[in-house]
Image 1 (cartoon, helix red, strand yellow):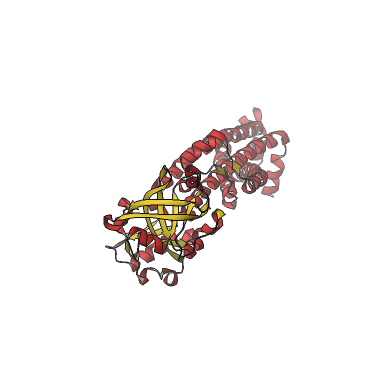
Image 2 (tube, one colour; image 1 turned 90 degrees about the horizontal axis):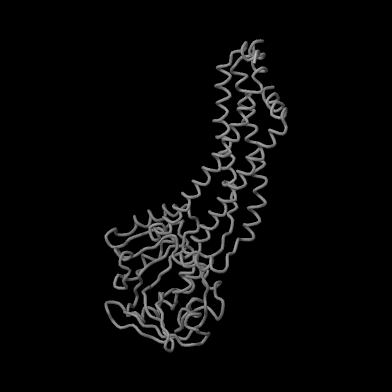
Length: 405
């Protein structure tokens, strides 16, 4: 009965109800779209950087990540390669030998990251073979390189051309070699796309004079929710004074801070948006309580309990908020779904400025039920709190004065 009365009351002034619902609809639509674009863009960025190369966790010799010197390489013993069999969350262990060097052809030179990989295992985690834009993938026993598209463009290289690599090897030995280019790979992250050069692991170990050694082991973890537990188990299995185990947030603190800063800016926008909507809802409550003072006075005078009357009024406001939130969710679902399937792609100067900061100029929308649910919960909380004013007003109501007014 109480719900039926509340439902009828909100439609007594149809225009006011529709205007209030429209303002809530707009707020939910705008907030859902903003959050889905922000989360989608950051998830795409993290996926490009983390899943395309770094992995969700890595094992190094103690102190390697601070210095990142090839002198911090360690022997690739069998006990380090079996974590995928011992820890269910780990799908694979990828050995890598990494160091910086110079890539040269003719009179052109640029700095690159030279990485020795196990081609089969690398492809299992990072799908490197699928990102080949031209040429073929590496084999474990050949003397050839894969290079990123950005390097090929800068040095004006083609498939089959010779690339000269120069670096400093393990414990200061000279590292130099000439390799035919077998293929080009493309990364979503502009930074990776301008510096990656891949060698088969055995060839890289010969190049650096580090036979049987690696600088890092990347861990393939399929479920991001299991990262922390997997890292804890790996740490427990390793001597703490010899190795460091780091998850992606420790590996890329700048990326985490940038995401937090961007999220904080969005929270300010959400606060202003919902503050405006709150004033609109509060205005509706003020008008509703003022227009119906005579009605409230009569109901209290004939014996209706103030608490029951307050419950009906509170329910009216909450129903109004829920209707607006549901309408906003229904309106935002097709919009978010469209931009999820058709990401926003930037071009021109804006795209170039984004690439300078390491962002791929693509903003896909994140289609997640949680985004819509959060907006509905926020609206219900706002309306529930604002409805307390009507309850407070009813508790102070004097029936005689209300009926006279």
